[in-house]
Length: 118
Ligand code: AMP
Image (cartoon, rainbow, N blue to C red; front, side, top):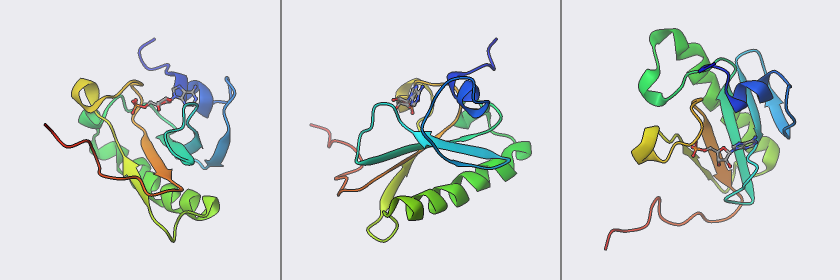
């Protein structure tokens, strides 16, 4: 089933994850391969495959991703120092899981957004 993603299984509680926030629109859980001291993924509770698939119907859930990110950042104690929010899209964006998700990274200085060319 194209819309049955690993993240949807986490939302439904069908596979284990370290869930740090949950409401009726979004779920947040720790990334299993953290790239920073704090690395949390925040996903809509319904599948939007990529950022290129968003529609007006998704606006409430997409807005909630940011509200949840703020809450999780405060909960994790990284709000004051700052953090990075990332959405990867499709192949060139490096997206691995086709269920739109916001990466919340922090807990140390994260350096430049990407390696400089050349
Ligand atoms: P992206 O490359 O933006 O699609 O990011 C996918 C992220 O999902 C990666 O950082 C993975 O480590 C993470 N990931 C994949 N499967 C799981 C899982 N079952 N639980 C937690 N994180 C996961």
